[in-house]
Image (cartoon, rainbow, N blue to C red; front, side):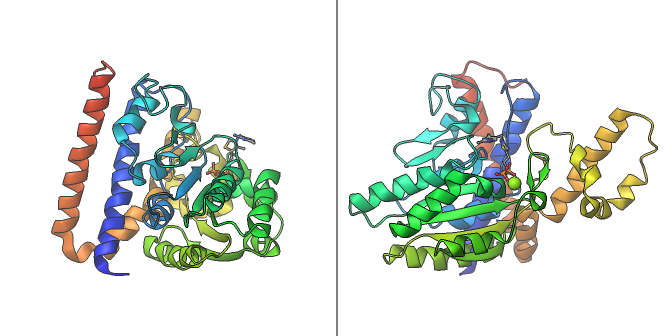
Length: 332
Ligand SMILES: Cc1ncc(C[n+]2csc(CCOP(=O)(O)OP(=O)(O)O)c2C)c(N)n1
Ligand SMILES: [Mg+2]
């Protein structure tokens, strides 16, 4: 891949991240209500896939739908209005962040774990019936690999030779469950057992993701059947915004990573523990952050990095102001 493409992927990832940071700000101010699941930490996986979709391709996503919807070119003002529960939002304010839908983009999200498998398989079946040489993508967490409907859709996609790209974003956790404790065997072997070819990749390295996805999609566009991507990533926010990250206590690997911070904890109050855990989350953020990783690769042109950040920051501010303006709200 040429360097210009890496810069574009970087811009896509940053745009999604800054949009989600703006969402975080509005959520913390109480303007967005309910739970909020971000896709921060997953940007390299999403950018590596969505940048290779064409017009007419379809996409089914899970409860972390913001990055794929933003990167697919769906109007961010409409997405934000949807989060704000406004009637002019993408789904008339009735779906919220977990139930986004755009008919024009053949894009649908759902909070039902595993449902992106059948949705993408259905999209692919329709595209095949219509004799369109298009593909469908399913984004889901590794927790969804233990859902029957995901495995059933892999089976059907294989047996009907449907162009579905199954993209598993593996962060090792499903809310508070350690995935290793509930998952037998290797996920890539599960895909293989259905006759689906698979690739395992570091999901924080956008170039690496782009390369394997490029190979998989090329096969699919040449009348190939389904393909499977197993990409590893970290959610620095935990499961949802405001997650106290208490589970780090039970994960020796996580604790080893942050042993120095733990020395600060004197065991005095619960509040102190919670603050410390947020700090730990911050440290993990830097270590496994796909955006920090890509910035390091591109640091030879520091001026361009700054320029992109300024441009994207400006755009996101305009998006927030426009959405709040339409919604008749103030940013206070
Ligand atoms: C069918 C179903 N079961 C349970 C839930 C509750 N739930 C929401 S997210 C989640 C964990 C999903 O884990 P994973 O698929 O690994 O995605 P992650 O949140 O780690 O990105 C669960 C169990 C749900 N939404 N749907
Ligand atoms: Mg998970």
